Image 1 (cartoon, one colour):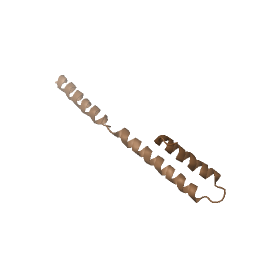
Image 2: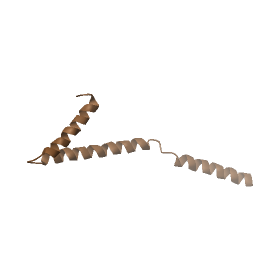
Image 3: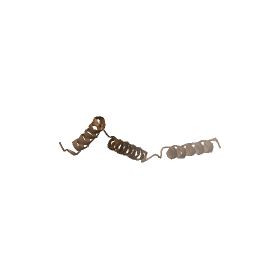
Length: 77
């Protein structure tokens, strides 16, 4: 009788461990969310830089640096 209970407990624990460890693909979802967040931030930055009038040295410098970084990743100089 006692061995049956131990067997049942071990089987239940094994199923619970398998169910809790089923997080396949979670990293992909997090990376996609991070990339989308960065895209939104960059889009907002470019939109804000376009709305400045007058002395726009800082916004144009930011946009130039971002464009340079993007071109640098693509291999352009």
